[in-house]
Length: 393
Image (cartoon, rainbow, N blue to C red; front, side, top):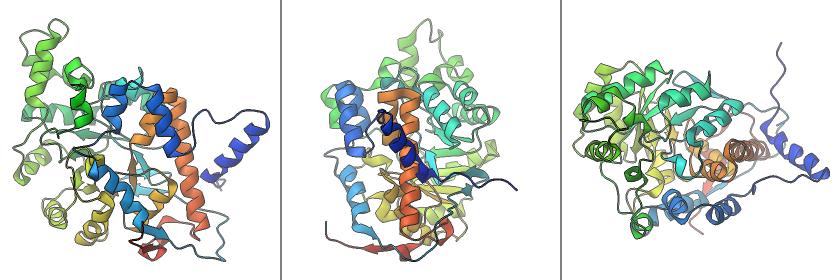
């Protein structure tokens, strides 16, 4: 009989014991301090690109306010000595309901970019969703991940042959699902980036999967190595696809047997259309507030989406996760798992692979302790009864 897993929450004792020897955590253990430290350490362009949102960033603020409106109601005299945080999503086993969200152009915060994140994910055993707009190719990241579960996020290009090439490469590299991001039909108005005229793709950042793709390269008169600016110009004609419709999903389904997950769904009618279209899962997300200023908070949309789909249909959550309490609330409102983005990017920028590990270990410990202190030992018992809604902020 195998030994029970060491609780994630024990990470706090590791920190305290190291403190006795004079060693403090390398990075801040609260999100606010982590973000503030990253702002001081990174270039203004890089920090603004990651932290920024669309317009006046009302949606970014709304994502956080939505979490504050839900309050946890702890239960007492429950034996919480042993906890099981594990779950399974589309055949992917998770030691806890947390995945690395797809974040592009990570080379702007650290030279090793997604490779460093992949090594951290491998050590933690957490699945990684790799961005289509990564600074490293999907094949190179897969090498770093080894046997760690991974999904591939697709920005559906205007060239369907390129889309087919991407998903084919992803399957060959061991990615287990395709996450189609729906909300980036166009790039939004982002004042922080516009003030510095900063779009990293135009400088060759975040286009590795394109530059090494055979379909992309075949369309060029000269290789990207010979004429990099022409390659970037071609990328600009392909990246966003405002013409996509529900009918296009059948094309993708015809060209891959991997599960297809739609990211960016906020309306229950769209959730029902997705189920009718035969996709395999949904991610409730507003792109972290980066696309539509004044949009509904992702957490506000989550319960309606969960109610709109069959009970066993996988619904994941993205946009605004910062703490273990946030993870708890998203699970209580029906998410099978959550995606974490900005926090680990700050960890990457400040400490590379080890920075990513500390941020995720802290989040997992916080969630484990929140679960136990709220009176629960497994995810299946956590439902909306664990929360109360308040409009007092």
